[in-house]
Length: 132
Image (tube, rainbow, N blue to C red; front, side, top):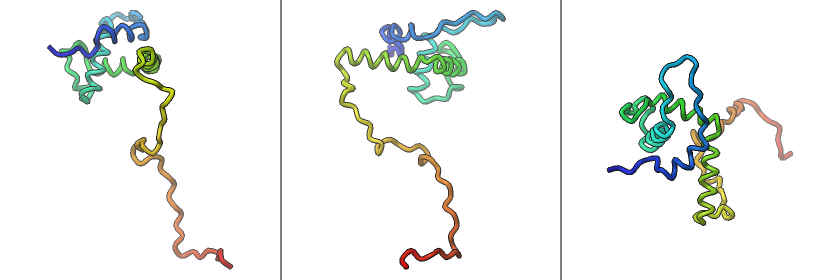
């Protein structure tokens, strides 16, 4: 049997951070369980599959997962979860953030970083001498 992506311990930490769903006045399907969505989001991020390729047999569609991911981002769930997990690690003595350093030379510049303006064309123009 495979290991669950969302353990009871992880779910206990995440559940209080997730905003409650209000029932829609229009009716329709009830919202998919948050734990199922979290497991689905982690599955997509772990495997690298496209959202639309998420297997519905796991309890919901990939678009539901993507919408829930975005809603939780807007609600600040991921930032709060990050802080909570760091606090747990600190409390367990597993990580010491007092000795952390970020070396910008090791951070990858995606797509080459900022694009600079093109250098102006100077061929055929003579500039003033700087030596006389």
